[in-house]
Image 1 (cartoon, rainbow, N blue to C red):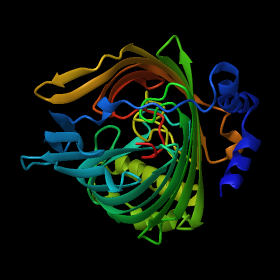
Image 2 (image 1 turned 45 degrees about the horizontal axis):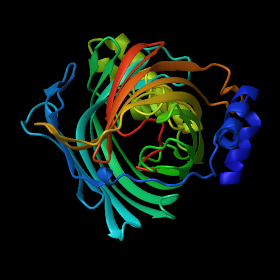
Image 3 (image 1 turned 120 degrees about the vertical axis):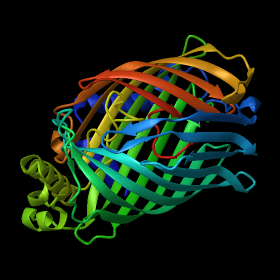
Length: 432
């Protein structure tokens, strides 16, 4: 699987992307003055107990608002982190999330992650491809329920990681909106279920597992999605992520990242438009805004028809890549992303924090400046013909082994903020 994936990717990259890819391997031998791979370092402060407690208010137009309360405890038992999110007051939107991560089963060599997720949530489903406009979407409001179990093994001082995972879930759509806010509720086939299997590996030849400043990190992840509806195609996704870290000016770091993702249909679903319309119609004859309903229905049918034909590689936009765009903004059968990020550490003093909403041992304060280029296409030969850009600045704080991140990015759709825990440009939960 790995050799076929790399061969397909390398044969079709443009000259400039091939050069960037090769630089990730060649730069360490040219720039680094030390023996490669670099000596591994650790900070004992990253194992200190930490916590965060905060409200996360949110609203969905036409549905209502809610104020979930989020609580996080890091390193409460050895390396274990616990996350709990719950809407305390009953209302139009409810959320329950419980995650136990990095629980040591065997002497911190075998780690367990368990996630339970039950949330009323809203998604934007954009038109497929790189050319979609910022208003080319329909919006769903649905109840999403998933359970995940993940086993993570780390060897050779965390230089090698192997990970396997299993998750099952379902979602039920209660409302669909168009970009103008028109609401449609006569939804055919509102329920969808799935089972996902993942396997991945990471080779981490850097100086620090949490906050690398020099070296190379290589990640490869395979995901297989199987849907409960025979009308929907099952598909596999192979994703590759390569990052080079180059030390600058003492404690600063220049990061170069290359990402590729490919999807493959494993079992075909419906691709006939009429058959899909019978299965996923919106009952527009019963809606007051019938024309607007039919336009949204066509978007929904096209979404599933093209997804059944070509699958869906890892999307661009949101927390990890192309941060100037909303979550899942660009998607197709293939995707690629290239990023430069300069990380400026302006404080590395270990400082105890004991605020009302946050506490722990702060070890790093960091600013970042980044530029990203990304593209998606069902035709792999067209993957790099038209690409979108995203650039911006960010602020990060490492507290008790967790990276609190705020990024502000600009792209063709405008300016977008990101507030999250963990560095961007990662691949799933590999390395986390």
